[in-house]
Image 1 (cartoon, rainbow, N blue to C red):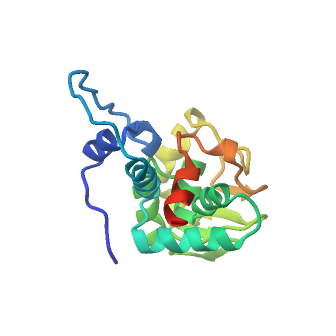
Image 2 (image 1 turned 90 degrees about the vertical axis):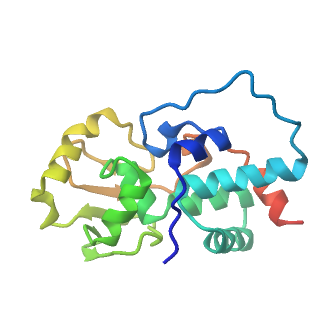
Length: 197
């Protein structure tokens, strides 16, 4: 399995992204003296694609497959693409507050700490559906890691499409993620333009 080993804060600075979007508290400092040439249209499109790939921790081949899947569906391709990425199990685990970062969520899913509708799932790219119940395994609930995360959950806002009680190890998908639920700036139409060339 390929892994993205790029330094997170350095990559965030390059993409003009706040590390808070990824779950990191450290901020990167902007250098006002640093002048950049005007970016070409292709450069802007590529930067948007790289930003979204970096946020969700998806490599090119898998990201392109998500785009093709979104293109086949009826509706706005860019919004469907972001919806597909949000529905990944590792992203849902991060949104529920069971992990501090998406990378951590991916590792926890890989190690088999979560169940979907009572069945253990260890595939981070698993697509959750409407009505699915995502929960922490019974065995994992007693660990100090999940107990500490449960105490911190009150600080994180829960998206509208997930129904989860504050002191619960289980959440339910009550709707599909909408464009408003994306909490970072992205111009998804640029990604569609890039792939439709």
